[in-house]
Each structure stands twice: as C-alpha cells, then as structure tokens.
Image 1: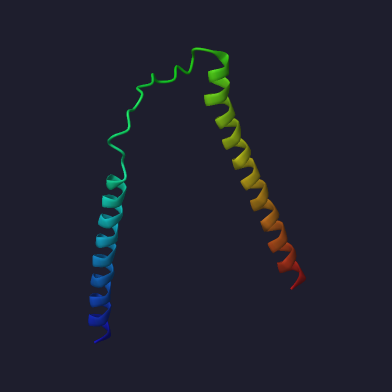
Image 2: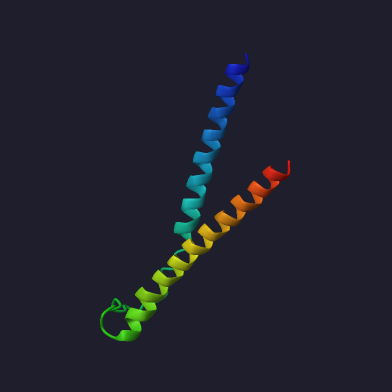
Length: 89
C-alpha cells in the first residue's frame, strides 16, 4: 500500500514539475519585446587593445584564482577547527 502511494505521489510531483517548467518557459518567451528596435553591435575584439585584454581576460582569471585560494584556505581553517573539537573531546 505504501509503495503504491509513493508511486502515485512521485507521478504527481513529476506532472507538477512538467507543468511548472512549461509555464515558466512560456512566460519567458512571452516577455521578449518585439516592437523595440535593436542595434546590431559588433563583437568585442579581445586582442584589439591592452584594455580589452586586461578587462575581459586577466581580471576574470585573477578573480577565479583568488576565489579558489580563498575556498582552499577556508577548508583548511574548517579542518583545524574540527581537529581542535575532536582533540578536546
């Protein structure tokens, strides 16, 4: 009896998720403006100037590296705290 309830509940959840995904996708498509003129811009040439290289390549790479270092340092601190708690017990 419990197994049948779980199957029915699982089916209802899947149906609900399917309906919600479709509603959200239709809402996002309905919000695209059609009457606004759009300017066609050229793609950014990354190697055109040194500013583009710094802004679009170097700074994002530095941000990612700093994030990874920060995360690793935080993980080390967490292990130290856990080790201290374990030693105190």
